[in-house]
Amino acid sequence: MQDQNLTCKDCGKQFVWTAGEQEFYQQKGFTNPPSRCPDCRKLKKQQMYSDRKMYTVKCANCGKDAQVPFEPRGDRPVYCNDCFRSMKQQKS
Image (tube, rainbow, N blue to C red; front, side, top):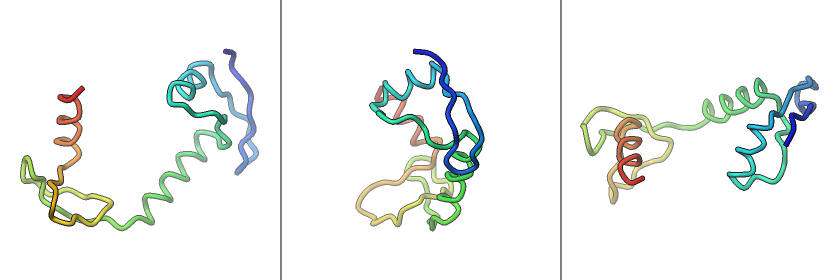
């Protein structure tokens, strides 16, 4: 794989899609190259998350307040980011 020059569909700026990024895409099973430059991708993610309604919950593990992007139903435990990450790493 070699670095590729791509053009952002939002701002028209040229950006480099590195060989390392291409390998990452391949490992994740993505078949299409990115259509947005890193800056526009970051902006798009920020816009998606700013529009999302967040809910405050108590972490089922440590008890601290946490923000989650879904309304908990009460039938399953909900964890803060730190506890969720820690539990996920323990399973790996």
